[in-house]
Amino acid sequence: MVTTRLIRPLVGPVDALVSVPGSKSIANRALVCVALADGTSELTNLPDGDDTVAMLGCLRELGVNSELVGDRVSVTGIGTDWAEGAHTLHAGLAGTTSRFMTAVAALANGPVTVDGHPPLRRRPFGPLHEALTQLGVAVTPSEAFGNLPTTIHGPPSTGLATIRGDVSSQHVSALMLIGPYLPGGLRLQLTTDLISRPYVELTAAVMGWFGCDDVEVGIDLIRVASGTYRPSDITIEPDASSASYPLAIAAVVGGVVQVVGLGAAALQGDARFADYLAEMGCQVERPDDLVRVRRSGPLVGIDIDMADVSDLVPTMAVVAAVAETPSRIRGVGFIRDKESDRLGDLALELRKAGVDITETDDGLDIRPSAASLRPALLATHHDHRLAMAFAVLGSVAEGIEVEDPGVVSKSWPNFWTMLDESFR
Image (cartoon, rainbow, N blue to C red; front, side):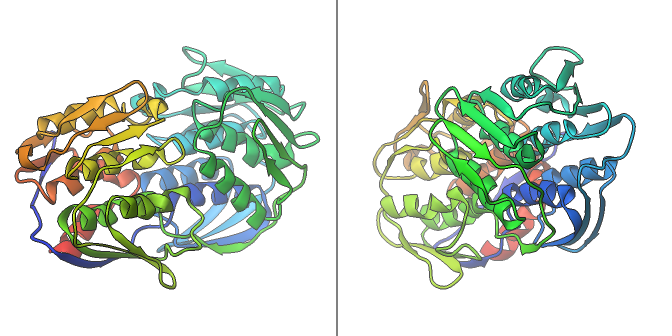
């Protein structure tokens, strides 16, 4: 049975202080590092979304012990001394988890099958699988090469490989994370331009927290020195992608929203979202350890290449729809292969709500649409980011109903509670 949620428009100006979950991007990178470390680490502010739960489950299947209390997890790493025998790792809908664990599986002591729900099986894994074969790893698909389920059987015999950089940065990050444990380290040649470079740089930063800081991210070559991770205790910063939704509400409704923990020192590339809102007419401040977005004047359109911050496209499209001048989003043709077709599906649903939006080869053109917004039932296409972006639209448009609202559990299970408590 499909459930729906009717979004109630807000009467501005808003005034909200919002806490968002820890970054799932940082969490899943850190979990790989601590699992490969020899000793016990503690991660605080761990997000409780499906992606992180899936990562913990996959690591437990390989023999890594973890104890979770609230938002704090203690993980006892085992190096590469994985549990013997064959294993099946189920990643659900988690692209990051499935790709990272595909690489980690190459270090295991037996065959490891990586699988997920049907939408994940359709997402591209080809560049990662091809790179693993170059490393000397056996990659055996159950159906088509480049898709799940796939069985991985290591160990790697070399650290030299080439890979496309324009399909998913997660493929590159997955190989980097196991790079210290490859023979001689990793030398990864990029055969195309690298998309979402901030996520790759984030991977290098997280690796450094756990002792593997000899990492070079160049234009067409990534190098990781051989070594081992060491245990460490860290606090995970709030998820910048998730923060875009409450900040966007300040932009579309008017008023002020503050998000705790994402100040000027934030590591995630998606923390730039506030700066894009500033270009559109908002006032942005970053006092101490928070970001504050305020809008009291007109909201104008933007022309922006979002290749490095593609998870923000649904949020930006909604903000652009209520701006007073047109916007263009460029450089993101590759997001058609995310949880949904984040160009086609997003444009389809927003048009139902009266948004004047056109899909282009590599992005979206959005014209001012505030006067034409109308009630609509919007499908989420298994995509948490579409659901939360539609909630932002519903804060300024009457009668926006979101289908399958529970999909937000992937990254922010308490999103709807936050919306009710912070903005009502």
